[in-house]
Image (cartoon, rainbow, N blue to C red; front, side, top):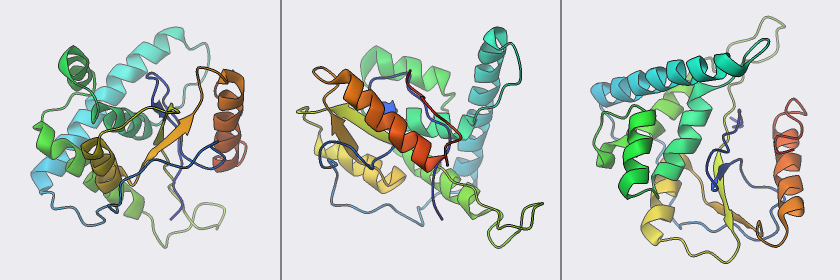
Length: 199
């Protein structure tokens, strides 16, 4: 199943995924766990936290929205969860609070992986109202500053639980080409439904 959805850019590393980046992806040799050992209680905790995050986010976005408002809390939560892997100290504390995590750190990412896989499996083999196959697609990955070093534990965690790596771009010296690379990828992955994500 192809994966894409909305994109979150609140942190320097959170964004969309690969394709057209100027360098090779920095990644772990580990493959995504497609059957993570996650209990029903852990999945429920992840879903409850995501729902709380989504309601809080909607409340904030609705204050500035003049018209219809559509966003994917799951996709934004997933993008931020990937960046949370590398957070520490006060940043990690604030992210835990905003994302409404109740699970211990060693369970969060497995639970997010399980939740993502459960959502992707829903509707498989079903048809939409137009008769075409139903498709839920989600894609989030990380973009980082070219030349940065990423710890193996960080790369392993995002690979095992999100199937992701870090896509380096030169934001410092080539911000406009970096922006265009990301925007082009987003347009391609969303069938041109999201254009100029980063103006």
